[in-house]
Length: 322
Image 1 (cartoon, rainbow, N blue to C red):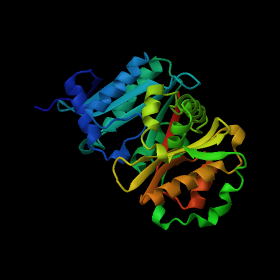
Image 2: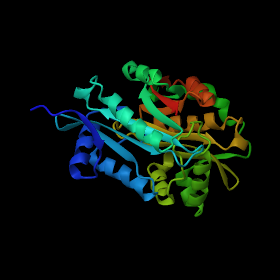
Image 3: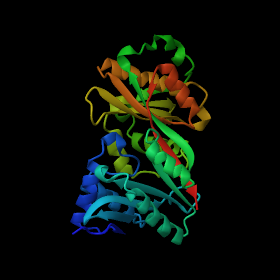
Image 4: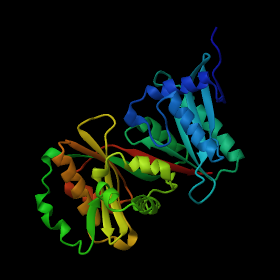
């Protein structure tokens, strides 16, 4: 006997976690966006992260014929002003799409957020998926920005034309985390202060960039210290650009952050740092560097274009005022 479809609250039990984990795992890794997960274990970890700071997220399930066909969840972006803005994620199982399930999940989530007094709701959608983008626009969402992936074929990149890029450093020195660990026992708090200061300046409206725990940061930067480049002014760290090994390709590196303190911008430091990362990749036989840049970061977009990074289709960040 066919059971009616329904939207219900998620329960933190094994069956519900396994159901949403299975849906998430059916999507390609590059289709999993900010604050999403790829397994039941990752979903539990996400929930714990929000519960630990006293802001448990609200999650909803869509059931079709007694099985979970989709889910949605939302949480307040409490770490960045203004208050009252909520992040929302909606996923529908691939075989259950185009049945109105996503719309019903959205309406249930929206009704609860309105009751909570939410001021705005933000959602990400891939710019290639017009079947998702068009309904968001019809529902009153406006585009805030786009985030694009970029790749560089290091085998085809000739950096010799940038030979003068390091002539303007003056007293500034480009070093590596590996060298700083050997030179300065106080490297960790100094690098942590730089990284968190730069993160607050990343030009993404309401982007989730609170200061990470120091223990997490120490482990994060230890991934490839010889490819973590730092600009030093005396004993002060003023800029950074660093690479991690790619999770899905042994021939690729992922460029995590390239950023410069405000008072040191306009001196070509970002370009010089990017050249250092490219030289590292070429020297160690990596064929590709992958990174991401937002549409409201024209300076970095221009640097990527000069260096030969190729832009791919990316994400659109939408917001609806309530």
